[in-house]
Length: 218
Ligand code: GRF
Image (cartoon, rainbow, N blue to C red; front, top):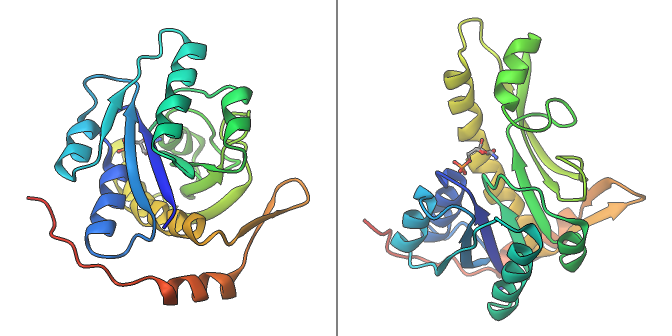
């Protein structure tokens, strides 16, 4: 089974969604490491509750932080990386080391509303529909080839909080679906950015995955 690492900066709700999916047998890759750039990130406790090794890498110096991450990723033989609420911009050198093997989840329908406070941007802009996106990470800010998207309506009485909560629930589904696509190795990039999903390959992969029952940590 492919092995992956998760980089976080905070709450870790997307991380928890992946680990809960794994506990119920719905995640077909093994999370082997969680790295946080914040020593007080609540997501670290989420990982520890699920028995996933954690590391804190402070980002005071970007180059040395990335070098440390690469050492940790290599030690755990991580095949791919998920950025889940990770708030640092990675350099081209790091991305090249994991070319087309870094996935990010963003709370908007890219290319609309890249960057921070995407939910607030959508509200202020008066968008009727927003959503969430998973994409390959490239050297830009939320500009990599798009893997999956889910649309979320913006309601007349929405606040940033209510909209963010509704989008987050969709993110939790999308990130699990995207990890499983990575695990099946069924994503191809045509030309420079259109992502094609080999559905037949995914079906074969899915059929071979044993439904694993795990105890859900209290
Ligand atoms: C999420 O909306 C995610 O898309 C964004 O940060 C928020 C918090 O994510 N990047 P999490 O709860 O830490 O997974």
